[in-house]
Length: 180
Length: 175
Image (cartoon, each protein chain N blue to C red):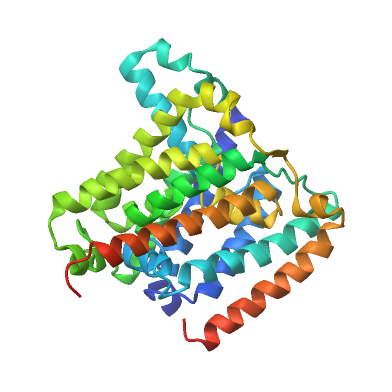
């Protein structure tokens, strides 16, 4: 049980740091998230894309050194495109996502704590109820497994990561220049 | 220590912070940052409490067991971390209706809560359908270059941008 306690405490500690960062970034605030979805303010994407560049380069170095084994999620068009669009509509109506809503609750936002949180739990329970049929049906449509972009293109991860990171930095530069 | 009491940090500083945080979740806990599975586990715990073992026998809850794990504690920690960050800058406030919403749709609490609830249902349903959320797919999965995560993340934003524009474009009170 000692291991389990250690894992749980590590999770809690990482969560405190993650929540702290999200709040300081402003993304626990409905106004900031909805302004991103209305394409008026790109704070959310700036945070996410910067994290992807920094995180992605580090994780692939660690993997090359044999320190970690990455674990890309399997998927299919039926799962990720359809589920992603349903999620997106919810994202636009609620104005928080499952991570930022935790931060929003800590920030004192009651529409997150009362409306949004209850909704997410109901939504998750509904998916659990319909899961067996979905798993046998639409989840299998256009299945591609736990593939990475590098495996798809049959190149090394660096051949994807370096151009992708460059492109992201260029996009961020353009966003800054455009005053978004 | 003025940076600790600042209301907002540069999005790039926050993004670099989250990127480095994800290095350590992998190095120390062998886990990616993610959130939505914890809501599914919580839903399972509630269903189990309300309906007993018949809920626990659902295929979904056999694959995603209704129990507290690393990520569940992460989400709990996020509430605490955001609370302290808000407290330090004096940004903590109890608000029922966000100001942007109130300007567009009025300050009725019930209307906001109903739309938040409906949005939440779609968000929770869609996150578990897609197998992840803005953190698990949008940050942790995309940095692993997972095809599933890039498709999900792009669809999260397509859906969100369309829904937000329809909501604010068609339904907002004049101006």
